[in-house]
Structure formats: structure tokens, C-alpha cells
Amino acid sequence: MSATPKTSGMAKLERDAVLELASKNRRLDGRALTDYRKIKIETGIIEKANGSAQVTLGKTKVMVGVKVQMGSPFPDTPNEGVQTVNVELTPLAYPTFETGPPGENAIELARIVDRNLRESKAIDVTKLCITPGNKVFVVFVDINVLDHDGNLIDASTYAALAALMTGKFPEYELKDGEVIFKDSFQPLPINNHPVPVTFAKVGKILVADPCLKEEEAMSARLTVGIDKDDFVCAMQKGGIGELDSNEIKAAVETAINKSRELRGIITEASK
Amino acid sequence: MSKEKAPERLIDDSGLRIDGRRPEDLRPIKLEVGVLENADGSAFIQQGKNKILVGVFGPREIHPKHMVLPDRAVIRCRYRMAPFSTEERKNPAPSRREIEISKVIREALEPAVMSEYYPRTVIDIFIEALQCDGGTRCAGIVAASLALADAGISMKELVSACSAGKVGGQVVVDLCDLEDKYGEADLPVALMPNLSAVTLIQMDGKLSREEFEKALDMASEACRQIRNFQAEALRHKYQGMVDTEEPPATGEASK
Image 1 (tube, helix red, strand yellow):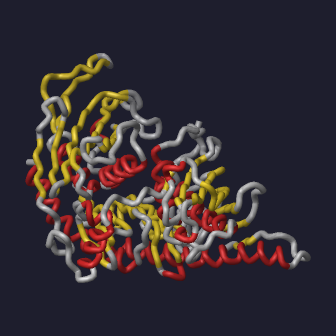
Image 2: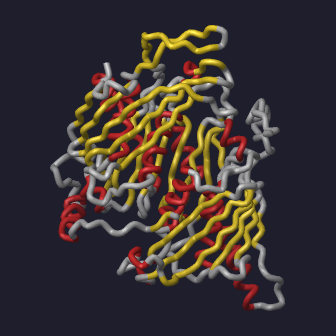
């Protein structure tokens, strides 16, 4: 059951400082309202994974490993491979992250990343079918949050995308219905590059790429996923506050512009 | 098992949808307030083939105690689909989808509830989707907001909700299950109409910026219509309590 979370441990003074700055259109770390923190993307860091990436967004650090294994298709899509996304908010990333099965925050995060990839058809699942209705490739995208300083949604999706874009899966041949894997690998079929842009509503304004302190002072959060052709492919509001529709429309416009720049950074790092 | 087939076309030559609606038409909605004996507040919504029951308990003492908030009520929400609510039986264990929806529904209702009036308590909202036909999170919010009002909980405004989306190249509102499955995009929105405050927005699919703006406007307009039905349903029940001659209370409104 979903319950109102405990209010954060942030001191009231600090929260007031964030809000006070926001009332003057300013931010704690001096960034402009739509500025992202410094992004660093490394790929191919886990040899045993089919694809991997680590994204550092300010002080937020997220690692993604992609594994590709043989499995069964869903009955309603017999000709398509399967995409699954899971998030682990590892207890080393933040004092209040606990061990145990994923909670609602981890599940929501995984589902937002999944939605961005799935709805933009980032992975061409039709190219991952081995024998229709029987054997397909399953792409496991496992996200490990290593250091939490806000905006896990964007960091996780960028890392997932970089891991997929540099990911490889085995070449194979069919002999008498048997699947025989070769020693060689081929790149994962990636068709689209969805880029989410997340905003926090702090006081009366929206700020992009919120750091943890801004997230703790925010009333609501809005993620807008934009695909490579500037279409909106995913969206999610979070938090117990509200937004107005003009604010949302403006956020979509900002997201479209911002996503181009961010997509450039991700594709450059995933060459 | 499933008999369902993908429809050939989602919009016909005269621009009508598979169930004969125009793009801006809602499905018929029936709202009933106060349908359960034991819950402090309850409501039932039927929207197309959706049948959803909501019960609210509280404000009441909170268990476990460590969840207590000193300055406001904790709001807890569970959205659950009955195993028989869908074509294929749904496994009764809570799915990741249900966990996410429970969270976004709670976040859609919290801005309306004046939780600071009830410190150190909990308000529990239980949403049981008995039959699902697309747009259950929105229908659940509409009924939950009535159930909260029925429980006598102070609210700034009723929360209304409706989805918009794109099917067969057209921007439409209130997608049914088939339109959701085979359409191009789905955009559920919850709104406090008289405050113009969006409390839930999600989207999946593919929309251009222009289509998105149109869909958001259409969903907001649909929310305003539904808010009138909600007010009517509440009025029916509570007028019924004043005037005993009146039969108790079904707020019925069709398109």
C-alpha cells in the first residue's frame, strides 16, 4: 500500500533557503533554471555484461548493466523479444535506502525508464525473435543506483540508453530447430533514443535536473520523455503537489529543446 | 483463451470511434455515493464497462505507530484489480503496475485533502477495480474523491480525472480498453477543476507537441464535465438524507 512518506531529514532552514532562492529564480548551486549538472558517461565497464554504462550527473551516480539471454516471448507478441527493466536502490547509495524487495520508489523509477524505452521503441524487439512463439532474446536492463543526489530518473535512463547503444548480443544459427550460438557478437538493434527531462516544482518555478536538496524542497516533479524526432513518448508526474497546464506545456517545450543537447552527449559517449 | 482481436480500424469513415463515440465524448458514467456499510465513506463508479468500488476509512489511529506524521494525516492508498476483472485471470499478488498506480493515485488525491486538519492519524483509501475496461486509474480517482467527501474529510476541491489520447490518428478522450491497447497514445490526467491544478499526469505512446497540448486541453475539459457529475452524485445522496421522501441517491449522468 502506498503511504505518505516521512518528511525528509532536511533542515527547515535549508529548505527555506532553496525556496527563497527559487522565489528569485535562482538555485542553490548557481545553475540557470534549465541547466543540467555536469554529465559524465562511461560505457563498457562491466566485461561480463552484454552492455554497460555508468552515468555521473553531478553527484548522482548510476550504473546499468544489460544482459541478453534466451527466453520465451509473451503469448500476445510471439514474434518479439522481451525488454525488462529493474531498479535496485542499493543501500550504499543513500542512508535511508534499505535492503529487501524493491519499494514503490524503485518500482516507479524502473517503470518510467521502461516506459521511455518501450514507447519510443528504442529496442527493435522484432529483431530479437529466434523462433516465433517459442524462443526470443530477453533484454534485461538492470539499474543500480550507487550515489543519490537527485534526478535518478534521468541519470538511470541515460545510463540504460548508453548501455543499450553499446550493447552486443550473440550471433546464432538454427540447425534442425536447435539454436547454436557463435562466438561472435552483433550490436543490439537500437532504433530510437528517448531522452527524459525531469523538472522539480520548487516554490512557484520549475527547475530542470533537480539535485537532492531541490527534490526535498519540491512540491511536485514532472518527467517528460522526448524521442529522437521530438515526439513526447513518456510522461510522469510525482510528488504530492500540483502543476497547472500552462506550466506542463512550457515544460514540454523546454524538454524538447533540452533533449536534443542531452541526446548529443549520450550518443557521443556511446560511439 | 482470449477472444479479443485487434480491431481493423479505431476510427470509421464518419469519424466515429469503435463504440460509436465522437472524439470528445465520454463513455456513460454512473456514480453512487455511500454504497458500503462499514467504510466511513464509499463510492462506486461505472464508466463504460469499468466497475470500481472505493472505500475510505479515517481519519483513524495509525498502525504501525512509527508511520505517524506529527503535523498531518498520513494518506494510504491501495489500487487493486480483482482477479476476475480482466479477460485473462489476473494473479491476485500485487503487480508492479498496481504498486505504481497506488502511488500515483495517492499523489493525485493528496493535494486535495486538507491533511493538516488531522495530525497523527491515517486516512486509508481502498480502490477495488472489479471490472476493467481502460482508464481505471482515472475512474478510481473520481470515485475515491467522492468516497473521501462521503467520509466527511475536508478537501479543497473534488479531484476529477479522465484520460485523453490518440487513436487512429485522432486525439480523443476517455479511451476504452481496446483504444488504449491498439491506439497510439494514452494520457491520463487528474485535475482539481476549480483550482485549475493538475494532480496527476502520465503519458505513454507518441504525441507531437501540438497533439499533446490538444490532448491535455481535451482531458481537462472532460475532467470539468465529470466534476459536475461528481457534485451531482454527492448532492443526490445528501439531499436524500434531508428529504426522506426522495429515494436515495444515484447520481446518473450519461453523455
